[in-house]
Image (cartoon, rainbow, N blue to C red; front, side, top):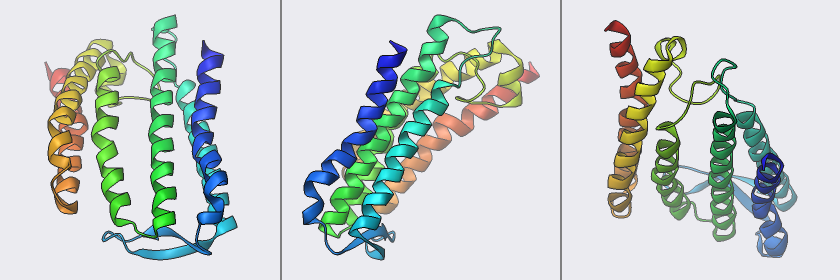
Length: 213
């Protein structure tokens, strides 16, 4: 199972690169590789340079999966189940990065970053929804989660903090998906910032409150 997840992560990471091979002739001679907040291209690369950039992003995606895969639980709490959870989270991050790479490629073809920014921001509620689902049952580990001094030194504080964070992420993500379709860039940024505050920053404070009891 572990080998199959690793192979699946590699395949998913390489899909944008495979797609780029097919549409390579459609790329403009000067490919936009960066856009300002209004979606206007402000930096360019050659077609070969853009291909190299995508190759690097695919390698980065695979590296992130392998890094998360090694983020196993502490030896004292390690089980077969808790060792599988980091791999599942790593696979989710691989899907997120692959979707991001597809969006970047399409923006390069269209030479318009406006839609790219919208699509990238729309990915975040789904990413947080995925994370929230796993945070609810995430065990103590050295790499993933709300890693404050209080959660790392007390398994009960870890469990309560991540159960709260997971539920907050799931609820805030579900509530945010529809509004994200209709608000402008500023509104989208505020929604993403709100989800970060609700799902990550408040649980950090909550872990401190638990440690004081």
